Image (cartoon, rainbow, N blue to C red; front, side, top):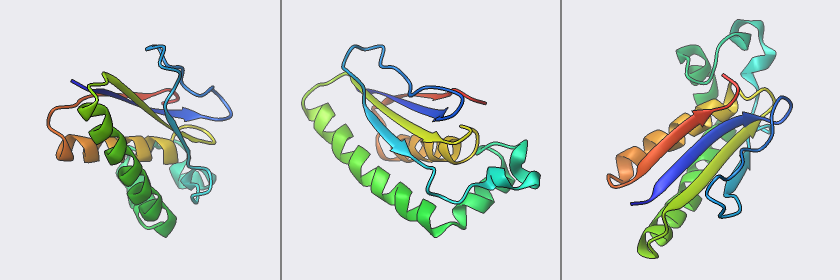
Amino acid sequence: MLKVRINSFSYIYGIIPGDSTKNGGGFVFDCRFIHNPGKYEEYKNLTGKDVKVIDFLEKQPEMTQFLQNVYGIIDMAVENYTKREFTDLMVSFGCTGGRHRSVFSAEKLSAHLREKYADLQIVLTHQNI
């Protein structure tokens, strides 16, 4: 069974998550080009798991396109790794504070994979919330 570890992290407060499987890493996606809800007072104390932030990010056309591209890449990797009987895949999303865009993206990828592939083990970790 393929285990997919999905992480969110902050480029400022943390480091890119390490790979404990000794495979040498995984995919790292930078979300900083997407409009940041953290720049607005009403969202500062919220995260990408909160409805107000989700609504904000879902209105950003760049976010929708970004996630569609991520899904395409990760779906290819999942299918390839499964055929080759690999056991681990790591995907990390980074943004400035690690609370909004990266968390939202990690949550969305996790939901996408759970819906599309019943036989995956998904481990979701948010480093900065």
